[in-house]
Length: 246
Image (cartoon, rainbow, N blue to C red; front, top):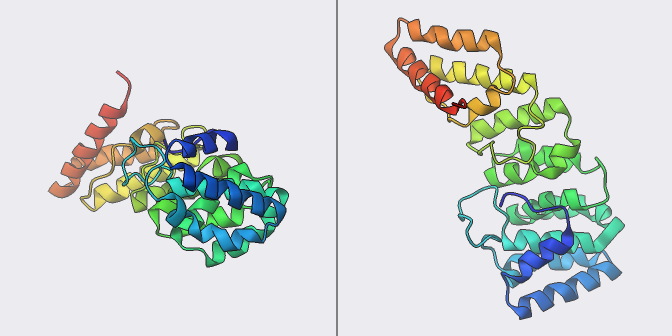
């Protein structure tokens, strides 16, 4: 479960199934306090992990899945939703002073808040980081809706560099542009030229808009005078073949 429906009531329902009644009562009380005064966010936001838990929200999700929501993610989303329109005025300070888990909760919450594209600077900052969980959280439904094409293209490339799986992203395949496919194919060629492997998952994304020039360059590596490049090209193209529908 990389993303939840954009319905805070369902987020609460999923959370209620994963925490004990005492923890849920704590969250409900905190959300009521925040609804009355958004400044209460700063006081309670850091406590979500300790009070609610930090495990996967989906009990079947792997703790190593960077796309999977955590229990404290859900709690922080509900806190920010409780603040309503006043949440926007608190986001920058919460993000600036928050640890990685708090920042991830903010990134998850962006799509649930009435802020339009005014949270893009937060998503952009997360993508520039090298924290794979922040990058994955930044590229949820909010980025799908508001991130410009060029920024989204480069974010996909950043995912491959940092080994964030791209096929579970909310915006794939809809947000994949021809330029993104071209850049990913160029990255494949670059890695082949270095005798390195590429993840198989790049191929379905590249094949959405097959870039002829870059694909010819990759195939030409099969005739390279260098054994490591020929072998890397063979492995990469075998993955491409395996990714194509039969």
